[in-house]
Length: 158
Image: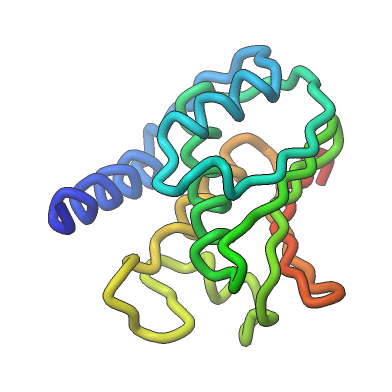
């Protein structure tokens, strides 16, 4: 299973970083993308508090759910209460969770194979994949820490 996970992540990275990467943006509702995200999640969706104002945006139907999945998986995995909050509206998508502030700037974690410390789970590719997908869409990935919570924000108007 672990080898299969490594191969899938590396294949995604290769696909995203190849010179001829094409994303196919089409008008989709956020709820459609969110539901696709839940289908590929590795965690229990009951651990997610979704506060969504549905909207339509131009997005790749297969890539954006991968980015959201990685953000939500991380939020739940690294949160002491194993929960994530999603706020989504026409301007931004926020993935929020309890936890300690990142020790480094966001740019550190969006480099391939970066991790806070070496772990047996994960490969340090999640945020690299997220940032690559977000950038291909013309969006911006941002991070802030406030009131004991980590906020990973997809800003649609960067």
